[in-house]
Image (cartoon, rainbow, N blue to C red; front, side):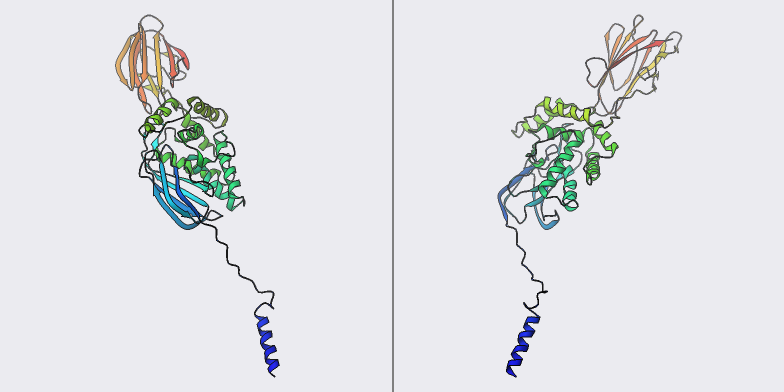
Length: 399
């Protein structure tokens, strides 16, 4: 009887333990080693973010989901520099989010609103991550490639970076990550930065960045032609020499040199303009009429009828987009042409030679208009956007 009881207990034990091979063995998950950094730092640059802007460092899992662990720090000077000391990361994947005002390198002034930029990085072997336009634009694409296409982080990072650069018809060696670039020494990053900035307000540029990120998220291509047109319009009236000068003035106060080759910067912009395939729609326009009557600058205007006996009255009018420039030279073809009315808006008018007037618009982003009269035909030279030779010429006849 005793032996039967022992046999029963043994059978019962087998039923609920090792004798039942269908039981699931629960394994304790292997924790990732903690990554410690004496100093973790970087630069946040659009233009450089200004002192006091906030930076959040969020730890992510292998699928780039938030783990709930967040470190906060801030920009410590006007170069966009931030740092976090003696920090231990329980994951090698991080997302950086920077929010604040930045120095607008196109206009040479601080932004008129705050801007949020992101970066994703694997910090296993690096102690510095920069946040910039490229890291921001590649972020949503990286997440999609990992979560939907099952790419590794390094594969997704490389592919997304190359796809973003292809929008601007630029390229980098595979060994150079977007988060390693610095605005003070990398002409490519500065080129992308000014292409997305143009003459836009911070709000409009932020919207453009969001729309591009959403557009390229699933296929890596900029399919919306309106977004490409906006980028082309942004570069239509860029003064790159002024951009470099603005950067040098900003960084000189911090004792930081700006090692940007202006010829290389210009070549990157030309690559984009010539090869992007996007349409530019922004240009100086010449309305048909102005305050003095028919506008002799307008396309298609080749004759003006006299209104006061033999004297013809007319306008010299142009509408200038933000960042553009214009000079007009009007020369009388039949004797003296010196009948400027003395009424002008946004023109500097000079009697540059007998029978000749030079009109220079002094403010972009608005209309320029002046009233003139002539008793003879006039020859007109257009010098658009700093051109040293006429961009077009025509004769307007009084008859």
